[in-house]
Length: 367
Image (cartoon, rainbow, N blue to C red; front, side, top):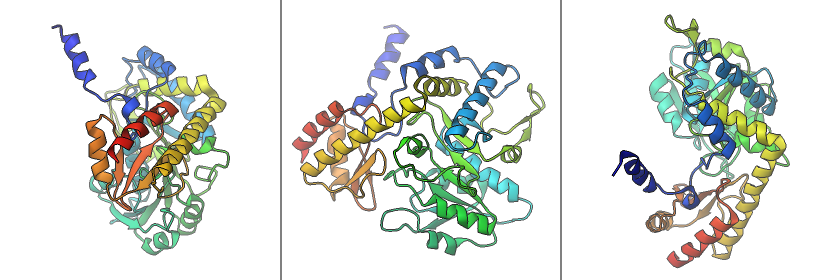
């Protein structure tokens, strides 16, 4: 057996996306794959060598900035939402570093687990604010946790568990009053909310927003890895810089040194091919299929935790873990949430109506 055949046999053990209803990643768009292959040897860690790839990244930042209501936004394509969140908080900390010895940030209880890593890596105290009955962050709770050592607030635009959107507009007012930063984790929602019929305010249109996490490898259908961090202006990137004496540039503001250009090329290819109108159609299809999932699950007697805001939906059940295990034996991957006990579905572009019908057919056998 040739080693390539051996590789393919390992790959065949992976569960195909057509059986995955839990992931915020998806099958890359065909143009993303083609673009990826052209940029496979690029390293944006040394942009003086890969100067065309760096120019392309600047073009992509301009496109994403325009989408997020700030054409002058500064940022870069990174490994994913975790790195982007680290950099958003790191910039906030560095801008305040001289003044504050024991910094803290206030995040919602619904924030992604990457903030656990942020507290550990950056030595920043993490304070968790309560949620309201709709699982959005409670602004009064946030306000009560702010003190003189608070450097930033975090709002989520598309929570990992429920796809809920925090009242970012109210958080924006709060940070302006208190002269602190506001980081918005829109890793998922950043490429959903702008294409909805009534977009919630979450981006740079709000004066208090200083940084935004947005991941093209999620709803942007770019190849993995293609995360993104955008800042209000260049000042935040300068706060992240370290000297790089042996590269073609004098300083580097990214977290990772070596950085593939594939994510940039693939994200650009998708946005350029589909345009904002094409992206809107993709989002509309996902929202339509989310409604189909709700109808099918309600017909089986399940109740949604909240009416889905975007293409993420959870259904209450005390048997969440049991269902998840039984379905995994049938090669269906779903996830669960703890509060309230529920099973969770993410209706990505690969989760078609046919995939939903096939899933429901197998789920019926279990229940």
